[in-house]
Length: 115
Image 1 (cartoon, helix red, strand yellow):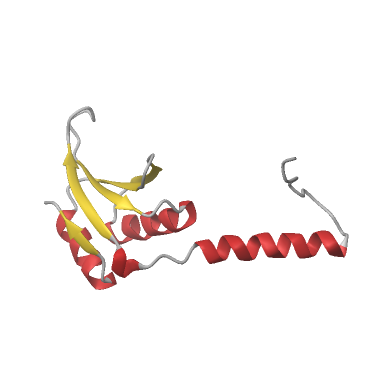
Image 2 (spheres, rainbow, N blue to C red; image 1 turned 90 degrees about the horizontal axis):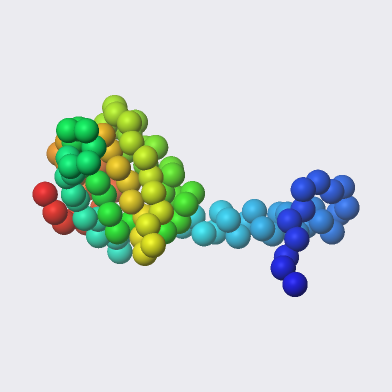
């Protein structure tokens, strides 16, 4: 039988279950940055002539990926998105921001390959 999701409850037993699941989510956000190796790509085809910088081979962790994409977009001053691929996470940043992204990754200690 599948595990039921608690929507609302005042039962103390249910409150303990909710806290345990929240701790599991927080625990899953820990990502070892020293083991990462990001691959840079620059795409223009199929995007209406606009250039997009793509970072591939990121951990497949939705919360971490979302936060990291938000940080990169803010530091580059541009838009973008994060996607979950079949094997790894992907971040797309609008424009050719390779130089800025490389400086950010170096400051965090993340290795990279590509352009």
